Image (cartoon, rainbow, N blue to C red; front, side, top):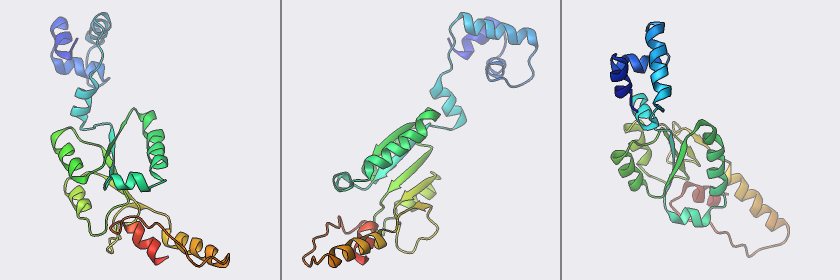
Length: 196
């Protein structure tokens, strides 16, 4: 049963039915009661996709990762994803994980998109966040954007200090041949670990 069908049964406009079902507008009590009665009798249920389209909300959050190498080398991704899911699930939102930034661009262009995005460990010199701004997609970066971009909303740990402390601890214990798996050179985190 659709709003248009209820409107036909009640002999009112679809806008009037929408006002009643959304508890808005001035509608007589008699008409309001009739519309609610017809909606219940006919098993009316709001179409979440239609409602989201009208409200311009997608109820989706995207996590954007540079490539699959990040998934293989990061011990943090599962915790990040679990934290996002724990936060958005009570709001009946979905999580979309895309591994390639170009895939994300195409996905946003060819679908209803996302309400916001979390960009994990961006690449140095990447212009992706400029595209996000232009597309007016709210985002936050986990990690450091680098290249002096202080205006990028981000959450980060002091990974340079962490790498420094880990190295110093090993040196204090007498270790001299230290292997450190830095990850890919294009990640800003790798830059910080090297500096530490």
